[in-house]
Image (cartoon, rainbow, N blue to C red; front, side, top):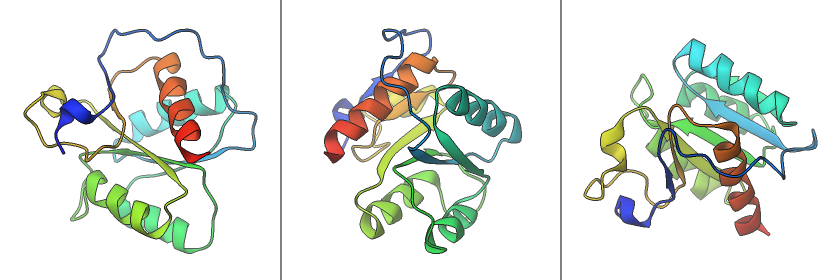
Length: 146
């Protein structure tokens, strides 16, 4: 699947004001290997009303998931340090836990190019992204899951 089929939000794009932010019961697993970005995304999601667990690798994410923790969403960076990329993690999670809504994020503009085979149909947020864009993607995932 190419990126023409992926929901992409460009930096600077502004979706409408977040209307359907979390109520504290929706859990999100965030996977980001840059500690500053992980902290910033986690803070933003908590402010938006989501319950968040943040980890820095695909290995840690799988450990959290296989321990029986329940999440409605997975938000993973495409380019993770280590042998397992965010894309590989997303595919593995989709096969093992199909009810989890999955979105990917990246700071690399080339992943948004129409000829790149980047995200296999997972919504893709381009960093930096606005809170409204993040909520829009999560709302879309929630709608698909229903």
